[in-house]
Length: 360
View 1: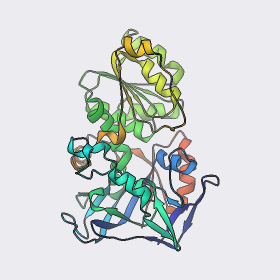
View 2 (view 1 turned 135 degrees about the horizontal axis):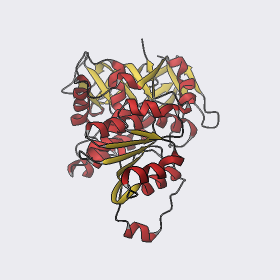
View 3 (view 1 turned 45 degrees about the vertical axis):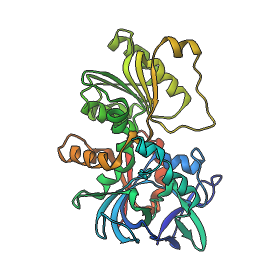
C-alpha cells in the first residue's frame, strides 16, 4: 500500500512510498481502511523532533475508516463497521483505568514505541502515537477504535478523533466551564477553534480568542468567540471585560513557555489555567513561589481533552448531528496523500483551521 514515510528528523521530509505494509491484525487487533486523516500540529512536532518518535515513521493520528479484517478474540466490532481511531485508548485494566482516569492510560502508547506497526520494504517502521494515519490502511488494537454510524462522513469523524476531542474536551471535561463564565483561549488553530466551540456549548458569557494572525480573528468569532485580539492587546481587553480581575478560565492551546505564562497572567486570582498545547520537553516556564501560593490559581494539564473516548466520541457526534458543533466549517483544505508533506509545512498559514487527507 501507499504511505507517507518520515526517514529522518534532520531531513524532515515525508516520502510517499508504495512498498509499505501494515502488520497484522493479530489477536485483539483490527485492520482499518482509512477514509480520511486530519493533519494536526502534533504531526508537525513529530516531523521536527518536538515530540519523540522512532524512525522510520508513518505520521498521522487523527483518522476514521472502515474495518476490513479482525483478529482472533475481537468482539463488539466486525468487518464493515465504520470507526474513529483513538490514539490513546484506555486498556481498562491499568491503575489509571481502574481509578477512573482512562484519559491518562499509557498502555497503548508505551506499546506503540516497542511494536512496529508497519514494514517499509523489509524494514520495521512505527506509527505516530501507535497509529500512522498517513497510510491507506492501519492496524490498531480493537480498544483503539470506536464504532460510529455508517452515515457519518469520514472527514467529520476524523476531526473528532483528536483535534475536536482535545479542544472541546478541555472545556467540558477538564475545566467543566459553567454557564456565564469568562473564558480566554490563546491559540486559534484547529484545537483552539474546538475549545472556543466548547466554551460556547458550555454557555460561557465572554469568550476571548487570542492569536497573532489577524486572519484568524474573524474565524474565531464565527465559531463562537465574543472578542478576538492579538497577544499585545490581551492585557487591555482583560482589563476592559473583567475590570482588571482576569478571566475565570484561561486555555493555552499553543504549547510555548510564553503563551503558558500569558494564560496564567490572564486568569483571575482563584481562576483556572488549562494547558492544552503539546509543548517541548526541553523548554521551561518560570513562576515564582509567592504567586503560586498567593494567587490561588489552579493549573491543569488537559491530555486528549480528558476523554473517555467510548463516552465522548458518540457525544460529539450527537452534538454535530444536532447542529450545535460545526465540524464541516473547520475543514479549510482537502489534500491527497501525495500532498501530506506540503500540508504539514503549511500549518503556520493564518487561513488554515484543519487540513484533511482524503483517501479514495
